Picture 1 (tube, rainbow, N blue to C red):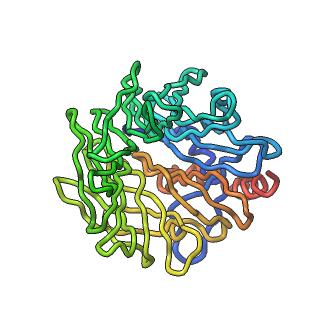
Picture 2: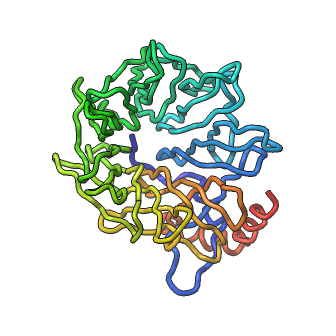
Length: 366
C-alpha cells in the first residue's frame, strides 16, 4: 500500500511538541493532531504523503466522527446518516475507509470516502459491515454479516462489488489488510473452532497456523509479501507479535510482559503496535525496527509530556501514527516524525521561532 515519498510541508511543523532532551537524544518529534472540537481522538491510518485518518470527538463530546488530516487541517468526514463513524485506513489518493452508523443508528456499514463524498459499501446480505483497509487501487477489505444469520465473513470490495471471501471452515472471518496485488490477510475460524491467521491469494484462503497456541491474527501485509500479526503461544500463556515469510511464522517475543501486538508494516519491514509491560494496566506504543522490539516512549523526548499508548500505522518514511495522552484522561491522535527527516535549517528555524513553546501552548489550550 505504501510508496516512496518526499518530505511534505507537514514536516515544517514537526517540531511542535519537541524539546531537546537531556541524556539520550529523542528519535521522533511528537505532533498532537487535535480533535473535532471534543476532548479525544485517535489516529488510525497514514499514507506516504502524511495524510491521516482516524476518529475524533465532536464539540461538547457529542459523538465522534471519522476524520481526514491533511495539510495541518483535520476535516470531519461526517457519517452515513447515523451518530458516529470512524476512519480506519487511507490510501495514496487520500481515500478513506471505515465504518459508520446508518440512519436510525441500528446498523453499521462499511464506507468509502472519496472526493468529498462518503459512499455506503453495503453488506454481504446481513445488517452490518465494516471496512478495515484500502489499497492504492481503491480496493477495500473488511467484514460483513451474511444473509440469514449474525455471523460475519471477510469481504473484498473490487470497486463495484462486495465479494465474500469465505472462511477456513468455521463460521466467521475478518479481513484486516491487503496490498496492491490483491493479497489479503486477516483471521478466520477453522472447523475446530479455533481462530487462525490467513492469507487469501489467487482465490484461496490459506491457514498460516499459530505460534503454538490456539489463535493467531494476520494484521498487515507489505508490498514484499511480509506479513505481521500476533498470536497466542504454546500453552496460551500470552500473545506475541510475529512476522510470517516464506511459510515460516517467527515469534518476535515481547518487551517483558505477556502480550505484545504488531498491527502495521511499511515497505522496509518496520512495524508498530502496542505492548503490555510487566504489571502495567495500560499499553504503550510498540516499534519493531527489524532487529528488536522497542517501547516508543523511549524514542521520544520525555520532556514532551506525552505517553504513547498505541501505534496504529507506519509509512515508508518511518512516520508513525497512533494515540496517547499527556497526563490527562483524554486520548489524543498523535503523529511521530523522525527527527532525521527534518532538514537542519528547518530545525534551527523552528527552534529559533519558539515552535516548541507554540506547540506546548496549543496542547494546553485545546
